[in-house]
Every structure is written in structure tokens, then in C-alpha cells.
Image 1 (tube, rainbow, N blue to C red):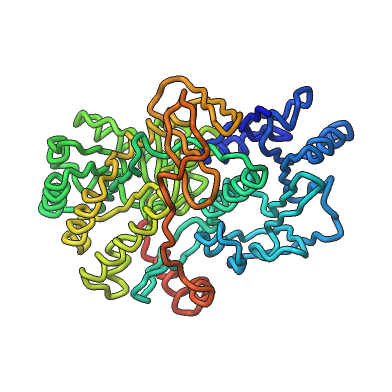
Image 2: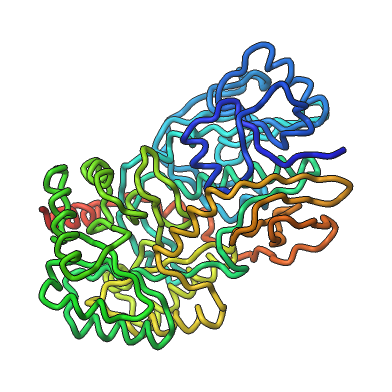
Length: 508
């Protein structure tokens, strides 16, 4: 039988489109006039179906289909086995190996759990239904990706001195990763491949380097640029305009570098008018020096409502605030805001505050690089020119070049990502082969029939599913359960650090 590899949604909404666009799958609202078993590899019930639709879904399951019930929507699973609870974070205590790379989920909201599951405390559940399979995902992911709260978090280090930073309260990327694993398992249990758009224009993952120029002087800027230029690294410089207003020409002469905006003043505010003025002034000064930035990142990485409203009035391609999103893949924000490009939020300054020497700093970033490459994720690090550790980046850039990563500026990556988003494709399985129909583009496709790895192919190709996966996920070391619990501990010293950070922050 010929099967179409496509995700069906009970209701196609913008938040769900944002999630599935990031994952890179084929999706559409379910058309109940079509043969469901042939046209939908998985169906997501994000809205309660009517009685006629439930009858069609019964037949779909009897024929071997796969469903996902979401929070509060249970036309098939026993409702008495569900309960609701407020949760801050969930630690992965399951033995399911496919979720092993996700150590925990920060949620800070009410979730629904299934009594018979141990996956993230019962938030994820699988159940055989006749010839088909039903799963359950108990966090309202379509709402959680829009949350804007933030808090200080620790980040694991092999050295045991775990650095910390103020980042998004909800771990949005891990939530989407968990949902992606769920989708994969449902496909594999149906003996179908999982097909998604690849996250790089080449077979190598993307590497990007962000520089926040906060108060940097000419000597520190030149030293960092020399290191980037020597290693052929494309840096994206987010300019603290006021600090460099008298010598902005130093930046315009840089080769293979992108210039973006970090604000005129290096300060934050809850005032919409002050936030807009800070951006407007920065753009005006840069324009006077023939600099037209495509991107923005907020001072201190702070995302708030004032910034959200302000960015709607400016024509930025992307922004990058780790208090809204960190680590992982870009996410097209709701309400027409710029594309968010996440970075790893720890810098050498974060490590210096923990008394790391340069060798330990280099080991930390090498460890982070290895873990990300083990999952074939984009790698985006960042630095401040006045902070220590220039030799650290020399070491990391050498590793980037040894790995042959695809080096891009933030704007280049944003342009690729938007092309990826708009690239449509159709995929079918027939007699052990996958057929991917797509217009010619720079987008490649991941094809996997197990959670251990994947193949990369061009659109318009035929793929033999009996071939071995060319790319294998590595078993990078992750913290044990006890360490994960400690990383989430809120002690007095940790709270004091957050209060001092807030007190010392510059205001507009």
C-alpha cells in the first residue's frame, strides 16, 4: 500500500504551525473526505473531533493508524486515568532510550499526566489500540512556546562548577524535542519512516558566532576580529552603538562579518517609548555610517512586553534573546515578530564568575560543542570583547574547522531558515522506498526509520529504506538524575545572584 508521510491536525492553528515548521515536517488540517490511513502517518487531536470524525478515527486506528491526544482531549483513552497537576520541572526517569538525550523539562504550568506512564512523570504515554497506536502529550505545547517569563538556570559542566544565566523559564526547545521523539516513535511503530527538513544548507551542521560589543574598546574589538579573520569565522557583531559612536568605521572595514544592533544604550526598560527610542536612535546612528542591520538582540538578553511591541515597528529579519529562547533551532515567533535565533547562553564571563581558568573554559565549550554535534544541532556561541578567554575561542574555532561545520552569519542562517520554512514537500512510501517530491532548493531532508540516526537526501529523490543510516546519533554523556535535581535547586546564594544581577542592570 502507498502511504503518504504527513501529519494531520484536527485544527490548523498558528501556534501548531510554528511548532511543526520548526520540526520541518509535512502537515495540514485533516481532510476527513480522504482515506485517512493512506494520507496521514500521524493525526494530532488538538481539538475535540465531532462524532462523525470520531467514527472515521476509529476506522483509522483499526487499520493501524497513529493518534496523539493532547491535554484535555480524550475521545479514546480512559479519562479516569488522567489527572492534572501544577509542575515546575520534570526529570526524565524513564528507561525509554529514545528520550535519553532530554534530561528534563522546565514547564512552570499545569500539565495532565497518565497514571500508567513513567515518561516525564506521565506527561507522555503510549497505548496500543486494536491495530493502531494512541499516544498522549500532556503539556499544552502550543501555548508554552509563547511564554515570555524568565529565570536564572544552571547549565551542566563536567567540571562540576555549573555556570548560570537568566534564560527562558520554559525550556521550549526541549519540549519540542520531546514532541518530535513522540512523532518519530509513532511513525516507527507504524513501520513508516520519519521525514523532516534538515537544519543546514549542507550536510554539516551550522556554526555561528555572536559578539555583543558591550562597552568594548578598539583594542579588544581588533584582537577579537583578528582571531575571527585568522580562523575564517563569520561573526555577527551586535553593536552597542553609543560605546563606539566615534569609531564605527572600524566595524565597516571588517571582512566576512555581519553588523547588527544591540541598542544605542546598553540598557533595558519596561517602557515601550524608551525601548523604541533606544532602537530608533541606534538605527539612525548606524544609518549615518551606511550600516543597515538586519538583526537585533536585547541588552542582557532580556525579552519583555515592551520589546515585543517595539520590534513590531521595525523591519528586523531576526532577533536573539535567550530569556525567550535558548539552545536549539530557530523559532518563528507568534504575532509577526522576527525569527528568533537561539544561542547557548553561557559566555566566558559566566565561567569567569565561577573561577574557571582558560583551560577549563575551553573544556566547557568543547564539551558543549561535542554534545550538540552528537545530536547534529546548530551551534551558536557568543562572546563579549572585554571579557577574558580570547585563547579559548581560538581553540574552539580550530575544532569548528576540524569538524568542517558550515559557518554562517546570523542573517545568512535566518535567510536559509525562512527558505526552509516556505519549502513545501510531499513524501510517500511504497514497496520499501521513499519518494520525496519538492521544488529544487537548498533544503535537504532527513529520512530515518529508527531513533538511532538518519539519512540525508535531496528533494526529488527515491530512497531505499533498507539502506543503513549514514548519520548516527552519539551517546554523549548527560548528567545523572541526582545532578539534574541539584541543577534545579533554588538555594539562597542562587536567589541572591539573581537579585544582584537585577539590581546592577542598566536601565534606559
